[in-house]
Length: 358
Image 1 (spheres, helix red, strand yellow):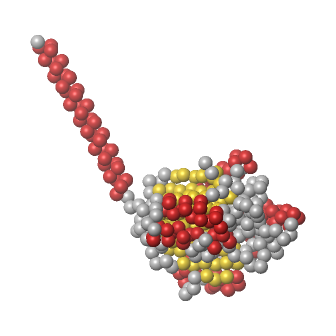
Image 2: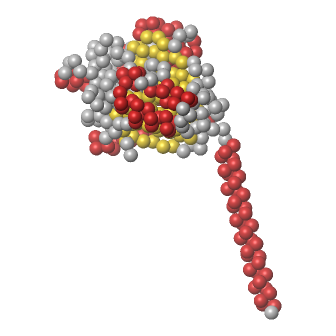
Image 3: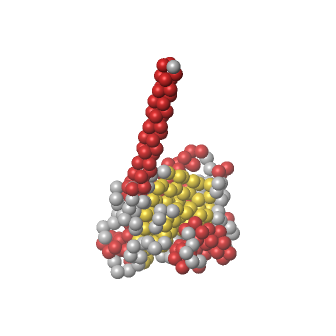
Protein backbone atom coordinates (compact mmCIF):
# COMPACT_ATOMS: atom_id res chain seq x y z
CA UNK A 1 0.00 0.00 0.00
CA UNK A 2 2.83 2.35 0.91
CA UNK A 3 4.52 1.65 -2.42
CA UNK A 4 1.31 2.44 -4.31
CA UNK A 5 0.95 5.71 -2.43
CA UNK A 6 4.50 6.70 -3.29
CA UNK A 7 3.95 5.92 -6.99
CA UNK A 8 0.73 7.93 -6.98
CA UNK A 9 2.46 10.90 -5.34
CA UNK A 10 5.32 10.75 -7.84
CA UNK A 11 2.92 10.66 -10.79
CA UNK A 12 0.97 13.60 -9.40
CA UNK A 13 4.18 15.59 -8.93
CA UNK A 14 5.36 14.92 -12.49
CA UNK A 15 1.97 15.83 -13.92
CA UNK A 16 1.91 19.13 -12.03
CA UNK A 17 5.46 19.90 -13.06
CA UNK A 18 4.70 19.21 -16.73
CA UNK A 19 1.59 21.38 -16.54
CA UNK A 20 3.63 24.20 -15.00
CA UNK A 21 6.26 23.93 -17.74
CA UNK A 22 3.58 24.09 -20.44
CA UNK A 23 2.01 27.11 -18.79
CA UNK A 24 5.40 28.82 -18.60
CA UNK A 25 6.07 28.12 -22.27
CA UNK A 26 2.63 29.41 -23.22
CA UNK A 27 3.19 32.59 -21.23
CA UNK A 28 6.62 33.10 -22.80
CA UNK A 29 5.17 32.67 -26.30
CA UNK A 30 2.39 35.10 -25.52
CA UNK A 31 4.89 37.64 -24.16
CA UNK A 32 7.04 37.30 -27.29
CA UNK A 33 4.05 37.82 -29.57
CA UNK A 34 2.93 40.77 -27.46
CA UNK A 35 6.38 42.32 -27.71
CA UNK A 36 6.37 41.91 -31.49
CA UNK A 37 2.91 43.44 -31.76
CA UNK A 38 3.98 46.41 -29.64
CA UNK A 39 6.67 47.38 -32.17
CA UNK A 40 5.38 50.26 -34.28
CA UNK A 41 4.55 49.00 -37.73
CA UNK A 42 6.85 49.85 -40.61
CA UNK A 43 8.07 48.28 -43.82
CA UNK A 44 9.83 48.86 -47.11
CA UNK A 45 9.70 47.46 -50.65
CA UNK A 46 11.89 48.11 -53.72
CA UNK A 47 12.21 47.27 -57.39
CA UNK A 48 15.03 47.42 -59.90
CA UNK A 49 12.95 47.14 -63.06
CA UNK A 50 10.60 44.66 -64.73
CA UNK A 51 10.71 42.87 -68.07
CA UNK A 52 11.82 39.71 -69.81
CA UNK A 53 14.23 38.61 -67.12
CA UNK A 54 14.81 34.88 -67.62
CA UNK A 55 16.89 32.58 -65.45
CA UNK A 56 18.32 30.78 -68.47
CA UNK A 57 19.85 34.07 -69.62
CA UNK A 58 21.28 34.95 -66.20
CA UNK A 59 24.68 33.75 -65.00
CA UNK A 60 24.93 32.64 -61.38
CA UNK A 61 27.44 35.39 -60.60
CA UNK A 62 25.26 38.12 -62.12
CA UNK A 63 22.18 36.84 -60.31
CA UNK A 64 24.06 36.99 -57.02
CA UNK A 65 25.29 40.50 -57.85
CA UNK A 66 21.71 41.70 -58.35
CA UNK A 67 20.50 40.02 -55.17
CA UNK A 68 23.38 41.45 -53.16
CA UNK A 69 22.72 44.99 -54.39
CA UNK A 70 18.97 44.66 -53.78
CA UNK A 71 19.69 43.47 -50.24
CA UNK A 72 22.17 46.29 -49.60
CA UNK A 73 19.64 48.84 -50.81
CA UNK A 74 16.66 47.60 -48.85
CA UNK A 75 18.63 47.08 -45.65
CA UNK A 76 19.78 50.70 -45.90
CA UNK A 77 16.19 51.91 -45.88
CA UNK A 78 15.04 49.37 -43.31
CA UNK A 79 17.70 50.48 -40.84
CA UNK A 80 16.56 54.09 -41.18
CA UNK A 81 12.95 53.08 -40.50
CA UNK A 82 13.88 50.79 -37.60
CA UNK A 83 15.72 53.68 -35.95
CA UNK A 84 12.68 55.92 -36.21
CA UNK A 85 13.64 57.70 -39.43
CA UNK A 86 11.10 58.99 -41.92
CA UNK A 87 9.72 57.13 -44.90
CA UNK A 88 10.87 59.89 -47.25
CA UNK A 89 14.47 59.59 -46.02
CA UNK A 90 14.39 55.80 -46.31
CA UNK A 91 13.12 56.03 -49.89
CA UNK A 92 15.76 58.55 -50.90
CA UNK A 93 18.72 56.72 -49.36
CA UNK A 94 17.58 53.34 -50.64
CA UNK A 95 17.30 54.63 -54.19
CA UNK A 96 20.76 56.23 -53.85
CA UNK A 97 22.26 52.75 -53.46
CA UNK A 98 20.70 51.61 -56.73
CA UNK A 99 21.49 54.87 -58.53
CA UNK A 100 25.16 54.40 -57.64
CA UNK A 101 25.27 50.88 -59.09
CA UNK A 102 25.90 50.17 -62.81
CA UNK A 103 23.52 47.20 -62.57
CA UNK A 104 20.36 49.30 -62.82
CA UNK A 105 19.05 51.75 -65.41
CA UNK A 106 19.26 54.76 -63.09
CA UNK A 107 22.11 57.08 -62.17
CA UNK A 108 25.43 55.37 -62.86
CA UNK A 109 23.85 52.60 -64.93
CA UNK A 110 21.64 54.85 -67.07
CA UNK A 111 21.14 54.00 -70.73
CA UNK A 112 22.14 56.22 -73.67
CA UNK A 113 20.01 58.46 -75.85
CA UNK A 114 20.22 58.55 -79.65
CA UNK A 115 22.79 61.34 -79.30
CA UNK A 116 24.96 59.22 -77.00
CA UNK A 117 24.03 61.07 -73.81
CA UNK A 118 22.53 60.01 -70.48
CA UNK A 119 19.33 61.87 -69.59
CA UNK A 120 18.00 61.09 -66.14
CA UNK A 121 14.53 61.39 -64.60
CA UNK A 122 13.27 60.96 -61.03
CA UNK A 123 10.35 61.73 -58.72
CA UNK A 124 9.50 61.48 -55.03
CA UNK A 125 6.31 61.96 -53.01
CA UNK A 126 5.22 61.90 -49.38
CA UNK A 127 1.83 60.58 -48.37
CA UNK A 128 1.09 62.81 -45.39
CA UNK A 129 1.04 66.14 -47.25
CA UNK A 130 0.86 64.92 -50.88
CA UNK A 131 3.94 67.05 -51.43
CA UNK A 132 6.05 65.93 -54.38
CA UNK A 133 9.11 66.76 -56.45
CA UNK A 134 10.37 65.60 -59.84
CA UNK A 135 13.11 66.22 -62.39
CA UNK A 136 13.62 65.20 -66.00
CA UNK A 137 16.38 65.32 -68.58
CA UNK A 138 19.27 66.03 -66.23
CA UNK A 139 22.76 65.04 -67.36
CA UNK A 140 25.16 66.12 -64.60
CA UNK A 141 23.38 65.35 -61.31
CA UNK A 142 24.85 62.23 -59.71
CA UNK A 143 21.70 61.29 -57.80
CA UNK A 144 18.52 62.56 -59.50
CA UNK A 145 16.32 61.36 -56.63
CA UNK A 146 18.12 63.83 -54.35
CA UNK A 147 17.33 66.64 -56.75
CA UNK A 148 13.68 65.56 -56.86
CA UNK A 149 13.65 65.80 -53.05
CA UNK A 150 15.17 69.29 -53.21
CA UNK A 151 12.47 70.38 -55.66
CA UNK A 152 9.85 69.09 -53.23
CA UNK A 153 11.38 70.59 -50.10
CA UNK A 154 13.06 73.77 -51.26
CA UNK A 155 11.11 75.12 -54.21
CA UNK A 156 7.55 76.15 -54.90
CA UNK A 157 7.40 73.80 -57.87
CA UNK A 158 6.78 70.10 -58.45
CA UNK A 159 8.84 69.43 -61.59
CA UNK A 160 11.98 70.96 -63.08
CA UNK A 161 13.73 69.87 -66.26
CA UNK A 162 17.00 70.10 -68.16
CA UNK A 163 19.37 73.01 -67.65
CA UNK A 164 17.08 74.77 -65.19
CA UNK A 165 16.96 71.67 -62.98
CA UNK A 166 20.74 71.42 -63.11
CA UNK A 167 21.14 75.08 -62.16
CA UNK A 168 18.83 74.49 -59.19
CA UNK A 169 20.93 71.43 -58.22
CA UNK A 170 24.06 73.60 -58.13
CA UNK A 171 22.31 76.21 -55.99
CA UNK A 172 21.26 73.46 -53.57
CA UNK A 173 24.88 72.19 -53.44
CA UNK A 174 24.09 68.74 -54.78
CA UNK A 175 26.90 66.60 -56.17
CA UNK A 176 27.51 67.52 -59.81
CA UNK A 177 29.52 65.16 -62.01
CA UNK A 178 31.01 65.22 -65.48
CA UNK A 179 28.58 63.51 -67.89
CA UNK A 180 31.33 60.94 -68.51
CA UNK A 181 30.60 59.59 -65.01
CA UNK A 182 27.49 57.89 -66.40
CA UNK A 183 29.37 56.09 -69.18
CA UNK A 184 29.34 52.31 -68.94
CA UNK A 185 30.64 50.20 -71.80
CA UNK A 186 27.78 47.71 -71.73
CA UNK A 187 25.13 50.43 -71.99
CA UNK A 188 26.98 52.17 -74.84
CA UNK A 189 27.39 48.91 -76.77
CA UNK A 190 23.66 48.34 -76.35
CA UNK A 191 23.04 51.67 -78.10
CA UNK A 192 25.48 50.80 -80.89
CA UNK A 193 23.85 47.40 -81.47
CA UNK A 194 20.45 49.01 -81.67
CA UNK A 195 21.62 51.66 -84.11
CA UNK A 196 23.16 48.95 -86.27
CA UNK A 197 19.85 47.09 -86.41
CA UNK A 198 17.56 50.03 -86.98
CA UNK A 199 18.49 53.64 -86.40
CA UNK A 200 14.84 54.61 -86.02
CA UNK A 201 13.94 52.07 -83.37
CA UNK A 202 13.94 52.82 -79.67
CA UNK A 203 14.29 50.27 -76.91
CA UNK A 204 11.88 50.88 -74.08
CA UNK A 205 11.97 49.54 -70.55
CA UNK A 206 9.26 46.96 -71.21
CA UNK A 207 8.28 43.76 -72.98
CA UNK A 208 6.54 43.63 -76.32
CA UNK A 209 7.06 45.09 -79.75
CA UNK A 210 10.02 47.25 -78.73
CA UNK A 211 11.96 46.70 -75.59
CA UNK A 212 14.82 48.00 -73.53
CA UNK A 213 17.53 45.35 -73.79
CA UNK A 214 19.68 44.92 -70.74
CA UNK A 215 23.27 44.51 -71.97
CA UNK A 216 24.05 41.98 -69.23
CA UNK A 217 21.25 39.60 -70.18
CA UNK A 218 20.49 38.51 -73.73
CA UNK A 219 17.08 39.58 -75.05
CA UNK A 220 16.03 40.97 -71.70
CA UNK A 221 14.10 44.13 -70.99
CA UNK A 222 13.96 46.24 -67.88
CA UNK A 223 14.63 49.67 -66.49
CA UNK A 224 14.01 52.02 -63.59
CA UNK A 225 14.49 51.69 -59.82
CA UNK A 226 11.95 52.51 -57.13
CA UNK A 227 11.11 52.33 -53.45
CA UNK A 228 8.03 52.66 -51.24
CA UNK A 229 8.09 52.81 -47.44
CA UNK A 230 5.94 53.10 -44.32
CA UNK A 231 7.53 54.62 -41.22
CA UNK A 232 6.73 54.23 -37.52
CA UNK A 233 4.70 57.44 -37.55
CA UNK A 234 2.32 55.92 -40.10
CA UNK A 235 3.59 58.07 -42.98
CA UNK A 236 4.08 56.72 -46.49
CA UNK A 237 6.51 57.79 -49.22
CA UNK A 238 7.52 56.60 -52.68
CA UNK A 239 10.23 57.43 -55.21
CA UNK A 240 11.36 56.39 -58.69
CA UNK A 241 14.54 57.03 -60.71
CA UNK A 242 15.50 56.06 -64.26
CA UNK A 243 17.66 56.60 -67.32
CA UNK A 244 14.66 56.04 -69.57
CA UNK A 245 15.09 54.07 -72.79
CA UNK A 246 18.00 53.32 -75.07
CA UNK A 247 18.13 55.43 -78.24
CA UNK A 248 15.41 57.81 -77.06
CA UNK A 249 15.01 61.04 -79.03
CA UNK A 250 13.53 64.51 -78.78
CA UNK A 251 13.79 64.73 -75.00
CA UNK A 252 11.42 61.81 -74.45
CA UNK A 253 10.12 61.51 -70.89
CA UNK A 254 8.53 58.36 -69.50
CA UNK A 255 6.40 57.72 -66.44
CA UNK A 256 9.15 57.73 -63.80
CA UNK A 257 9.11 61.51 -63.11
CA UNK A 258 5.36 61.86 -63.58
CA UNK A 259 3.49 62.09 -60.27
CA UNK A 260 0.51 59.76 -60.46
CA UNK A 261 1.97 57.66 -63.26
CA UNK A 262 5.33 56.38 -62.04
CA UNK A 263 5.15 57.55 -58.42
CA UNK A 264 2.35 58.23 -55.95
CA UNK A 265 1.88 58.26 -52.17
CA UNK A 266 -1.13 58.96 -49.99
CA UNK A 267 -1.39 58.10 -46.29
CA UNK A 268 -5.06 57.18 -46.83
CA UNK A 269 -4.11 54.42 -49.25
CA UNK A 270 -0.60 53.42 -50.31
CA UNK A 271 2.80 54.42 -51.66
CA UNK A 272 3.53 53.13 -55.18
CA UNK A 273 6.48 53.07 -57.58
CA UNK A 274 6.10 51.75 -61.13
CA UNK A 275 8.36 50.29 -63.80
CA UNK A 276 7.45 49.37 -67.35
CA UNK A 277 6.31 50.78 -70.65
CA UNK A 278 6.25 54.44 -69.67
CA UNK A 279 3.88 55.74 -72.31
CA UNK A 280 1.13 53.35 -71.23
CA UNK A 281 1.78 53.95 -67.54
CA UNK A 282 1.29 57.67 -68.16
CA UNK A 283 -1.92 57.11 -70.13
CA UNK A 284 -3.24 54.78 -67.44
CA UNK A 285 -2.06 57.01 -64.56
CA UNK A 286 -1.06 53.68 -63.03
CA UNK A 287 0.22 54.66 -59.60
CA UNK A 288 -2.70 56.99 -58.86
CA UNK A 289 -5.22 54.54 -60.30
CA UNK A 290 -4.20 51.95 -57.71
CA UNK A 291 -4.63 54.51 -54.94
CA UNK A 292 -7.99 55.65 -56.33
CA UNK A 293 -9.35 52.10 -56.47
CA UNK A 294 -8.39 51.69 -52.83
CA UNK A 295 -9.89 55.02 -51.75
CA UNK A 296 -13.10 55.10 -53.78
CA UNK A 297 -13.89 51.43 -54.37
CA UNK A 298 -12.46 50.29 -51.04
CA UNK A 299 -10.29 47.65 -52.68
CA UNK A 300 -7.34 46.20 -50.81
CA UNK A 301 -3.86 47.03 -52.09
CA UNK A 302 -3.50 43.53 -53.53
CA UNK A 303 -6.84 43.76 -55.33
CA UNK A 304 -6.18 47.22 -56.73
CA UNK A 305 -2.65 46.41 -57.91
CA UNK A 306 -3.81 43.22 -59.61
CA UNK A 307 -6.69 45.00 -61.35
CA UNK A 308 -4.43 47.70 -62.76
CA UNK A 309 -1.35 45.64 -63.65
CA UNK A 310 -3.03 42.44 -64.82
CA UNK A 311 -6.14 43.88 -66.47
CA UNK A 312 -6.40 47.62 -67.08
CA UNK A 313 -2.86 48.45 -68.26
CA UNK A 314 -2.44 45.39 -70.51
CA UNK A 315 -5.73 46.31 -72.19
CA UNK A 316 -4.07 49.55 -73.27
CA UNK A 317 -1.05 47.59 -74.49
CA UNK A 318 1.29 48.20 -71.57
CA UNK A 319 3.49 45.85 -69.57
CA UNK A 320 5.57 46.16 -66.43
CA UNK A 321 4.94 46.17 -62.72
CA UNK A 322 4.69 48.08 -59.46
CA UNK A 323 5.84 47.82 -55.88
CA UNK A 324 3.69 49.29 -53.14
CA UNK A 325 3.02 49.37 -49.41
CA UNK A 326 -0.22 50.48 -47.77
CA UNK A 327 -0.89 52.35 -44.52
CA UNK A 328 -1.19 49.03 -42.66
CA UNK A 329 2.13 47.68 -43.92
CA UNK A 330 0.70 45.30 -46.52
CA UNK A 331 2.97 44.97 -49.56
CA UNK A 332 2.33 44.32 -53.24
CA UNK A 333 4.94 43.41 -55.86
CA UNK A 334 2.65 42.95 -58.88
CA UNK A 335 3.99 42.55 -62.43
CA UNK A 336 2.86 41.05 -65.74
CA UNK A 337 6.29 40.40 -67.23
CA UNK A 338 8.67 37.42 -66.99
CA UNK A 339 10.45 39.00 -64.06
CA UNK A 340 11.00 42.01 -61.82
CA UNK A 341 13.97 42.74 -59.59
CA UNK A 342 12.34 43.20 -56.20
CA UNK A 343 12.71 42.93 -52.43
CA UNK A 344 10.70 43.64 -49.29
CA UNK A 345 11.30 43.78 -45.53
CA UNK A 346 8.80 44.08 -42.67
CA UNK A 347 9.14 45.40 -39.12
CA UNK A 348 10.49 42.04 -37.93
CA UNK A 349 13.35 42.21 -40.43
CA UNK A 350 12.02 39.36 -42.57
CA UNK A 351 13.60 39.76 -46.01
CA UNK A 352 12.28 38.48 -49.33
CA UNK A 353 14.19 38.96 -52.60
CA UNK A 354 12.88 37.95 -56.02
CA UNK A 355 13.83 38.23 -59.68
CA UNK A 356 11.78 35.80 -61.73
CA UNK A 357 8.05 35.24 -62.08
CA UNK A 358 7.67 32.23 -59.81
